[in-house]
Length: 286
Image (cartoon, rainbow, N blue to C red; front, side, top):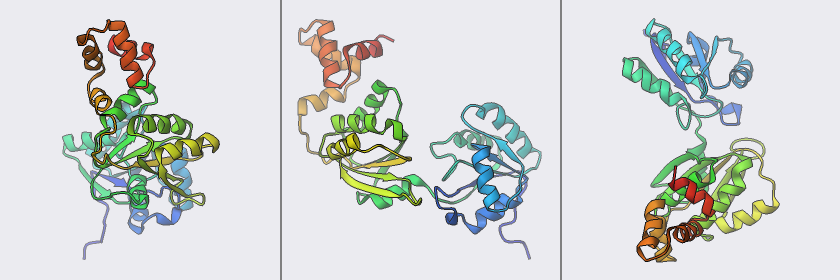
């Protein structure tokens, strides 16, 4: 009789790991991590703690944003030579807002089998807890730390009717909430999900305007998943909404076409977009 869940050669296993509570590790995940030839991890120090807690001794190799090309090539070569590998990230599902997507693509291109050992995913867990519409949603991952790029991305989502999911670090939370409130409107609903499955798990269901006020007084701590309600179809300020859907250059051009000097048009468009004149000038002249 063939062994159930037997580890196969030349196979990459995407193994979901707990996002906070170690008890969420699955029996199959433990078996795979215990039996593959080697494990590729985003941060070998963090992964060593997980493996030690599970009493798993395995060869660990580093695979992260800064070495993905060289390390990915070595991993692919080992897989082509018949070895099996488990890919894990610091927490949750590898390849989701994670450099693992590159090695999956490389394996697919090379004809290497890739399979999944499902596990926790912060985005889906937060969506389920949000109290917002879960039927249709989009995952945006981390927004850019650069203000004008972040605001450009949020502006593109103004009329997105689906629930939007974002990841955010504590040191950027206030800026992100401020931009969201400015662009989506103070009354847009949001669920802030912090430290999911951990002892300090916290779910805050409120509006963007209230969230800005809360975190003006409260120090952000831990990793956040932000679940934002979709556009309800009601346009509060039609003229501004339409302008924000244009590219920055088109936005400026609209004012120039109305007879406004270009520098004045840049100043007014920057005000519409919540940017400084110099930020917008730099953006359209790069």
